[in-house]
Structures are given as structure tokens and as C-alpha cells.
Amino acid sequence: EVQLVESGGGLVQPGRSLRLSCTASGFTFGDYAMSWVRQAPGKGLEWVGFIRSKAYGGTTEYAASVKGRFTISRDDSKSIAYLQMNSLKTEDTAVYYCTRDRGTVTTDAFDIWGQGTMVTVSS
Amino acid sequence: SYVLTQPPSVSVAPGKTARITCGGNNIGSKSVHWYQQKPGQAPVLVIYYDSDRPSGIPERFSGSNSGNTATLTISRVEAGDEADYYCQVWDSSSDHPGVVFGGGTKLTVL
Image (cartoon, rainbow over all chains, first blue to last red; front, top):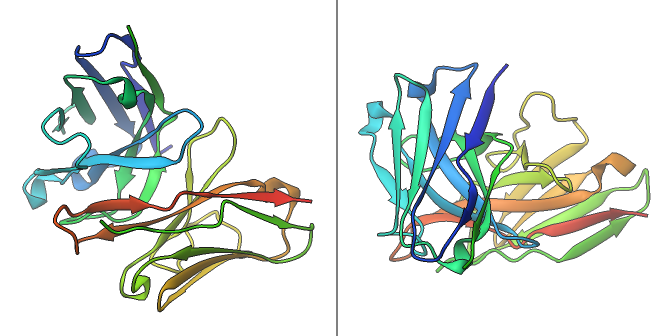
């Protein structure tokens, strides 16, 4: 079964850091780009960023709202994608979803989603 | 930055056809993807590349895209289709390329 499972969410104070993990199974992880999408409570979807597959350089793109604070990385040997979040702000409070991205150089449709992990930034 | 505009809500009776629009400047030149999100669940891809359906998505779901409007059409609506629906594109036209989501449309089955 194709599956993505996020972990690492929780309560964190403003200004602190948190790292989310996304463990993939059921497909060849290294062949795919991966995107992170978040959803603040009661709000719509917001793209956070994505990482290309190694075949396309393994490079990253980020939304303007998180660029310089968040970093996406991947470990293809473990089938895990990471979202390192630094200098967290209260407005980063959201459910964070890991998604499998059909894209290559640019993002495409997100065809597989994890169940999401909640991140609450509060003092 | 690029903006996608969706109606906040659409209501439809069971068995009828629901149409959810997604407006954007020259959106017909972009590939549009649609997601369904039920309460407490992760989104699910229902249409990609304007009108393609992933495996497992009923044929009742279809999409079109032309000019300044993309449309998700759900035929023979069922109670189980009640959900929030989001459109999505990749925008490379602005200073900061990235993914853009519409604000979402809540579909209510009367």
C-alpha cells in the first residue's frame, strides 16, 4: 500500500525549532519529488515547499512565507523527507501534510497525502 | 502574485450536477488540479491536468479549463460528495514562482 506517515509535530514556543519527518512506503521514494502543504485551523491549504528527486538535482523551492526559515531535505536510503522549521512564528500553527508530488522540475499534482501532523506555536 | 478565486460555497440536491469554479488570470494556460477534503481528513486528488481522473475516482467527477475559469463538475451528486474542494496551479509568472491554491469551496448536499 502506498503510504506517507508524518511525525514530529507538537507544541513549540515562538522562535524555537522543530523538525517534521515523512516516512514513505509502497513506492520507490527516490523517483518522486515531495511537497509539504499546511493548513491552519479552519483555513485553506497553503503550499510550504518541495524537493525535487535526485534525478532532477534534489533541489528545493519554498513559499515566500517560509523561505529562509524552513528547509526541506530527503534521505532516499530511508525513504524519508524532512521539514526543518526554524524561527517559528505563531502564524506557522497548522496541520502539516507531506505529499507525493508528480512533478519533476516544477511541482505538479499531489497524488498521495499523509494524515498530517499538528504543529502549534505558542508561548 | 497569482490569485485563484473560488466561491465559498455551493449547494446542490442529491442526483443533480454541481459545478465548482476556479477563476484566475488566463488560467486556461495552466494545468489545474483539484482536491476533495472531508472533515478531519487529508485532501484527496480528484482531478489532475485539468480533466484527468486518478484511479479510484468515480467518472462522476470531471474537469475543464479554458480562458479565465477552470471548472470541477460532479454529476449525480451523492451525500458522500459533501466536502471542501480546492483548485491548485503552479504559477511561474510572478517574482516568486510557486504553488497556488484557491480558497476552497464547501459543497453542501441538500
